[in-house]
Length: 135
Length: 135
DNA sequence: TCCAATCTGATAACGATTATCAAATTTATA
DNA sequence: TATAAATTTGATAATCGTTATCAGATTGGA
Image (tube, rainbow over all chains, first blue to last red):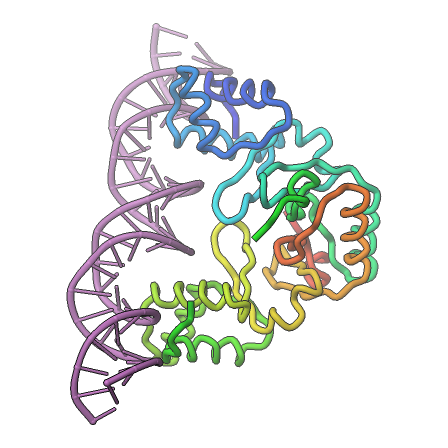
């Protein structure tokens, strides 16, 4: 995909380039673009997000059940680390940690399981939220 | 929830008790019950699954984006281990492994992140599928 | 410029889940 | 056991994020 260079395609890439490391749902991206007066059909946005994901420009992760998140710069180093997502504040943490690399080796050698870093987000409570009261 | 003991409630509990450790979507459960001639409204099934989950009789995990899985016997020991889900065959592996407990401690002490085991399913390729050809 | 390949947008369709609400069932009480 | 209040049920409409459809617009190469 991505045979033609269209304005929407460029716009979406620019959006990610301008947004650092945060993650967004398709709906959030559509809203952000709309709010700055940029008009794009929701179907087109989904198509381009899928295309850019296939190409490795962005990547998607599951957020709970429903929505997807898209990341900038994934292709550079996000496959080299793990992600921690806080169940309270929703923030995503990018974690370079040799412990996880060892875990990967362990899983492969002792359990025959090849972990996919991109898919294996760890969920829990971040340092800011773990102290607060919880139900 | 679960104030009244209804036949549907008992039936669903029996279903899980008879199914060992596999996980099911609501749709799969509904289909299984229907195939054995048991009639239950889909809304009722969802309600009971939610209720039984709240009570800890079963638990749910995300399967990719959409569906939920429900487990029997979770309350006994599933919160004591991690789950590995194979991206190829879809099977879920229950893994007791001290490595993961150490990982938990490490995350807490060195990164301030409290991992939730129930939520943190690891994804990858299982021992049966990792050898096969892949795209 | 012309044409075939590709992309776009409006909208219908989809699949899983939840909400609605009247009717049926369960439980406690008499 | 009869009664009534609380709870559950089922049919179905609604919801939400996402994908499919398809005619019309855009792109890029000849």
